[in-house]
Length: 128
Length: 143
Image (cartoon, rainbow over all chains, first blue to last red; front, side, top):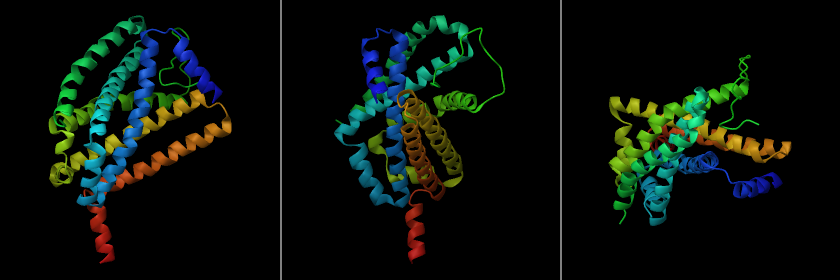
């Protein structure tokens, strides 16, 4: 536990650049996706029970206004984690590209924004 | 300490016998590569092309029915197994990074894997039995 507190303190005070933020976002998005996955598997299991319980869960868990906001976070998390994961794979298998990793982080953020704009429009547009 | 992005320093690479952590390292990369295609497709298809508001029980039933339903059940099974396998490992990396007490580390890891395996079982049941399949089975058993 003290390791966690120390790590959070160092994470805030250590003036890391793109690499550190990429790592923090990768971990945070990964944990968030796992939490969503738990909910997602349970709701699909409920669909195996029958239409009525599924429609009820879907209505309150996935289409309420707070769920709309979380849906944006989910899209951000999944797309970011996918893109940053590709950066990790590329640098793991081609270590020579490590010197360009800051540039690759910036490129992945640009791609992230390009994908998230239509995603956010589609998600919020259907709810309001 | 194994983290998701740890790798040997260049020039210090050792090609010894593959061990458990190295297989997991490879699994994280390979599952990540596969899910880069499948999960991003799944996300954009469900949230942008169909839209969560338009998702109904009928959608799931239709997608899992007929000859193409076999493909989509296998597709969803790959999402379930790769996603949960990749995710449980990610949580284990995080636990290893912060929880250095061996007993607490073991208990937390066991809890994460226990919950993960239980959810994989629930998901597999849904995929095998289909939409409404468990309810139908229950009705048949109880008459």
